[in-house]
Length: 119
Image (cartoon, rainbow, N blue to C red; front, top):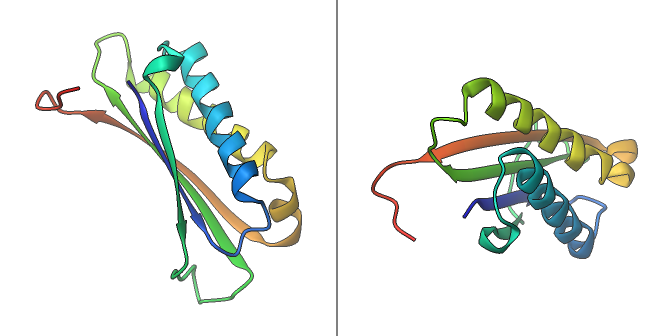
C-alpha cells in the first residue's frame, strides 16, 4: 500500500528511466524493511520544471522522496528513521552522475496516513 512520490528538479543529469529505477529500488527497500507487499506499492515521479534551490544557482538540484504508509504499532519511530536513512542512501547511490557534477540535496520523509485513508 505504500505510496512513493519522488520529486526531482528538472536539471538533474539522470534520465527519467534512471529515476524510475530509483523508485523500484526504494520499493524493494520498503518490502524488505517495513515489511510490505510489492503489489501494493504505488510510485510516481514528479519532475519540477520550475524550482529554486538556495540562492538560485542553476547547478543546484534536488530529489525529495515522500513515502506514505499505513500506521501500524510495530512501525516505531526508530524503524521509520532507519528506513528513511536507507532510502536516502539508495537514492544517492543511484544518482552518481548528478552527485558528482552538481550540488544535489537528497531528502526523505515518511508519513503515516490517518485513519481516514481508504484503499
